[in-house]
Image (tube, rainbow, N blue to C red; front, top):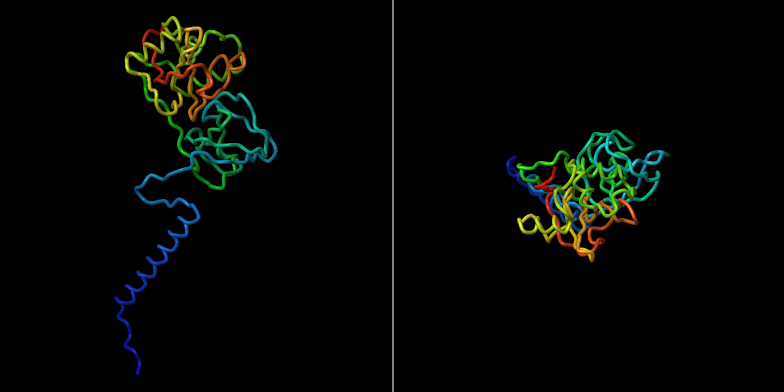
Length: 261
């Protein structure tokens, strides 16, 4: 005797169960292989760093101070070179080897390159977004943005003209003639006493990074983000260093110069 035919609704139920079963198998497989699943409405987690390969079809790629081809080109990286990406941010749209994108990669050398020329194994974002410092109080807004200040600083890369003038360097980077403070030690004291000094977390991009030193005058630099700073007294001039490489680290603050002029 023939078995009775399943009803149409029963058949749909069986199909739906099979689909859900397949989804479950796919999800388990993805988790087992370390893939990140995109879930609608849930922020996607990215890696803290990743390795990429420069692909320009021959020419060296300009490393910029910020996420735009208008920012200072302070060094180059060779075609085929391996690079380490520490974070990514949006900026100028660039068309390159891997199509058109607004994504820029912050490298371990402290500079940025367009993701259009970097082979990462993905067409989209692969590492965490770059974190920028918050705004200074509106009573004393800086003439330059964080990226503008960093660009100004990179235009003076390797210059020795600002040795022993670290405070003037960061103030002028942000567009001021001077900071209004006698020394970086005094500036750091002011930021601390007024609640602006943060002692936890990696200094975000654009933050002022403060230090004590043996001379008692202190030191200050500008954070590039991801543990990097640009400032004076790096091998005798303006350069990039780790944020813990200068003297005794005090903390970081927003780029606030209340007495600047």
